[in-house]
Image 1 (cartoon, rainbow, N blue to C red):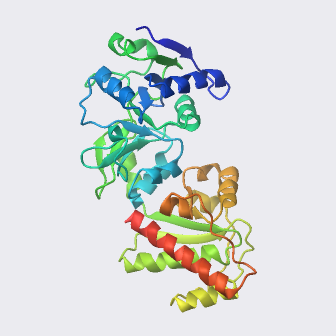
Image 2: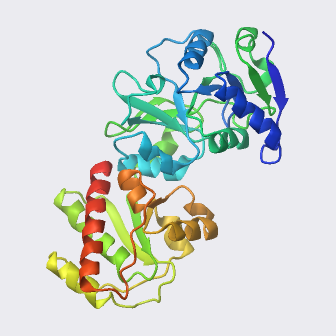
Image 3: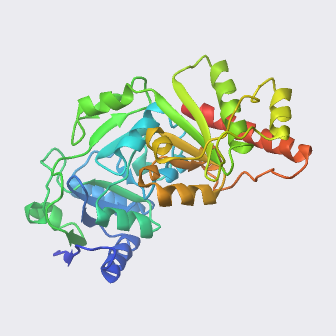
Length: 361
């Protein structure tokens, strides 16, 4: 079988070509596509026949799982049980890019993505074609390199072996891949994380990031209520875990500098044995965003603001409930409302922070 070939150099403009790629995947076809590292093969992970064909084509051992390509870091929570501190540092520093991170899976199916040990490898590629397929396809994209198992991977379509070409349905030709070397694979289910394969990201780069202390930032609107509560509650819960390996701050996207917390916030926290009276508000700045490894926000508007104004925030901003429970829900602002509403807000934040901490440790 001779596969179709599509020349795609500007995927954001070649929408018809991208649609053809997606239709091929939806029909159970195997697509050969470029990544930032090497050329890969992709199928719809939920299509068992397509997955089986891919394993047969690659001559890949059935017990060896495929890699999940995601469109954005926030979707990781739908597939994993834990996102430890080490993973947060790596996500911030290397995604999108040539790093595959192995997590403890929260899913059992699609089985092709989960190892016998219950682990799942996830990656977000920086290549525009790979990103476009992952972003618009609404497909669980299972991938592997475009070569027979144990053979050398390829960085340009002209070097794809005849054996692979005969089994794929569509080849996307975008020229030579930028890096030409496979992704590095690191397992964060153990501490310290274990490098399974050194590829485009060196061991020294990984170690330099992993050895850094992690910085966490909580953001709301004025930094006098929700983010103050979140910062204080997180510090309290984290300390009870006997951990001291984080720096925690809070800020507001529209904050006036050096404003005290609201009276209700002080009183509600005092009931919990936490003193926030000395807190002074601060506005989000480029420096704060830059130094933070993970930023938890209360509302979608906060997320849009940060990712819109600060490009460095793209891979580090999470809705609080998105990280804790995979829900794209907001924590409402209690400003101007009753003390009972403040109490409910604090209870809500505390529940979510407890889940966040459990996911990190």
